[in-house]
Image 1 (cartoon, rainbow, N blue to C red):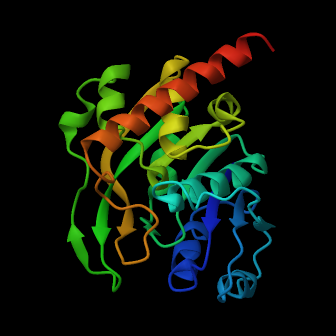
Image 2: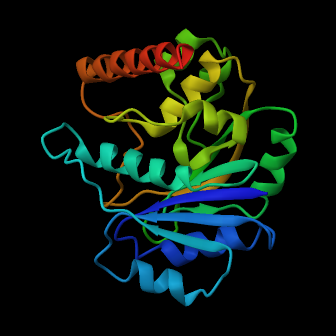
Length: 248
C-alpha cells in the first residue's frame, strides 16, 4: 500500500492538477493523506469535489507560532507534513507539494527502486505558473557522486516533493523535533545516519512549479552564515534524537 502525503495551505490554484496527476497512477487500495493548515480559500472544497475515497483530509491548526523565526513558512510546512505523516498507514510513503505535477510514470519508476532501496530521491524539471518549462533538470549528478554523510550535509539533496521511502524510514524519523526547519532533510539525513540504503534517480519525475507563492525557493535561503547555522542545528537535532531513542 502507498501513502501519498500532501501538505496544503491556500493551494486552490494548482491543487486539482496536482491531485489528478497523483490519483491517476495509484491503485484503489492506496491513499492520499492531506493535512490542511487552515486554508481560507477554496482548497478544501476543490479536494472534496473530486469525491475520491482514497483521499483522507486531516485539518491541522498549528498551536506553535513561528512568526519570530527566520523564514517561518519552512517551519509551518515541516509541521504540516509531520501531521500528514502521522496518519500515513502505507508500506511506502511519497511526499508531495500542493502545486506541482507528477510525471505519468513516477510511481511505477520509484516503486521499482523501493523494492531494493529504502529511500529514493529523483530529479525534477521546473515549470512556471502557466506550466511552461523553465529548466529540464534541476539536480546535477556531481551532487550524487558520493553518498557520504559529509557530502549530503553539504548539498542537502533531499527535495521533499521528490522523496519516497518505506515505512521503516518513516518510523525512524518520527516524531519530528518541535522546531524543525527542513522536514525533507531531516528524513533523508536520519535515514543515512541510520544506515538505510539511498538511491538517486536522475530522471525528472515531477514538474516543480515555480511561482510567487512557493513556500520554498529552488535556491537555498539567505547567506552562507544562515546555511551553516541551519545545517548545524539539523545535525544537533539528529544527534539528540538518536541519543534520546537509545535510552527509550
